[in-house]
Length: 297
Image (cartoon, rainbow, N blue to C red; front, top):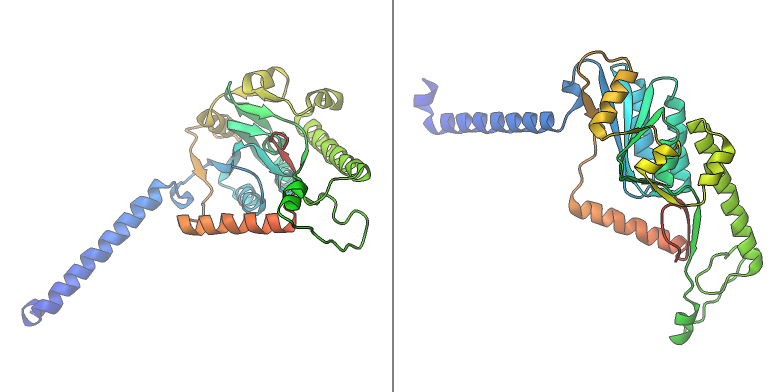
């Protein structure tokens, strides 16, 4: 017998087998507990989460595209909990949403807040569900400008700028903005605001003048937004999943799957976030533009 001839080796082999079996078992339980789509058989609703300030569209666009092309997914729910964000990424996600409408049903479930760029995205879906107290609306555009000129003068720093054109350093934090520059920026804001109004009018199938009357940056509760035609129904995420499933033609129990998120350590997240802030502030520390619910500075 091998166990008698080599007792120590036999013990090591048994212990190793038990150890690896335990690892496989625990990994399987964790995977199943996170709602892995590979184990969710049959027709289902996919949930794509959009949370925090919107600064990048790549992952969200990819999730929407993958679920749109997955035949087992009959409908998509966007779970939005965001005050908005940068104009470009918000428009990219809206574009992907509009490409999905007509292929399969896609609805929005609003969390605690779905304002400005968050509402911009929601407006492109087939339906919007919110809670009575959800913060939404804030249809508008903001450019922020911070001036450090007086502080620099007090500590004896005098910036020197060499530029190729009159407006190249527009929005500089080290000098006052001229009236001509304000007009240029106001024109830019007006153009992006028009794009916002057009998107809401298209997505919600609302009269443009009606949307424009609501697009003065004010916020609404979910309850008020419903009375004004910006939201369709009251309900939570589970209600939205059920609604989307029925819209997608699911007859029995509606089950949901979630987009898989890359797991990163706290330190990696901290470093990535810090690096983004450093890069953004280095490019232009005094100027930002976005579809975001944010007070003036």
